[in-house]
Length: 427
Image 1 (tube, rainbow, N blue to C red):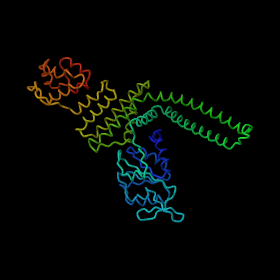
Image 2: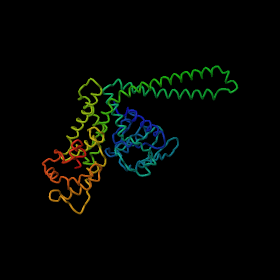
Image 3: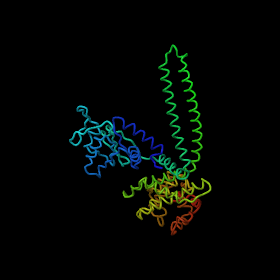
Image 4: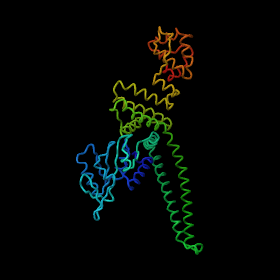
């Protein structure tokens, strides 16, 4: 099952189809290449693809596509579009006799009405000049966390219970057909009423019978639609069993897309991610219940993706990746510890508050004491500085001089932080 068969992607595809028939060409923001896949499937019979950055004499392919009335897809454009394409983007058509021509690269090129153009960029957040926005309609195919979760849910259910996912797609198709049929019946009814003679409308047997037939058909369709919705609700309930696995996979993918900020070499495509997702599904052991199977899927997906990514990271970046993954799991409440945004910011930024005197200067560095002054501003840590300075300075000194203090319980009541490892990290 491909991602472009998922309803959210199909909906974007319908929008692209509408824009293709209007006066502005679509410009797809498509870092995951979902839009390109959809176009290549839909227009596979007449599609011509051009990659400006890789192909020599690409302008000749553009002209040939215009003359043949093909569907032209220009892939991988940057933030600046070659000025040679401006007449085409602006649809600067000149009539000469019965022919429509566009002047491109100094040549008059015939422009057939059935010619279609779409542009695509892999940039996730491009900035285009205002004239580009005036010439093209920007269509954002960038996947969102919610959208990707739905797509992965469909993928997992299709792999685990293909009959269930097939029934789901058939129901969606039938519901769309019901809507179309009702709209057609309404249109036919309006046409019959508008063509009827007001003077004889009550005695028009054919019209009355037609209205009765339309009413019965509409009632039957509505009953079928109600039944379809009930069936869909039951199917959705079954599909929700795999929601945790889909959420885990979506979280992992968006975590991977941020690794480029550590090193531009760390780039991961959605296709590659899906490949390893299937591997994780195949490696998961079978269980009697769906709930147990889903829990195993979550662990398998996390382990498989982590192993795949860690193999390609520099050693100095692996700890960063583990930390990012851990904090994401904390945010989702998976690790059994509460996530606090204020504590997280403290941990990342390491803020300090300079004070005139450090009473523990003989064993505690000034930088650490300044950090403690900032820590006591966080709810729950108000007494920490007082405990260190007055209540048990010797015990805190012993704790801080431990070889691995993070593995040893804190003095006084602070030993309770052993059950709250996230908050203990702050200390």
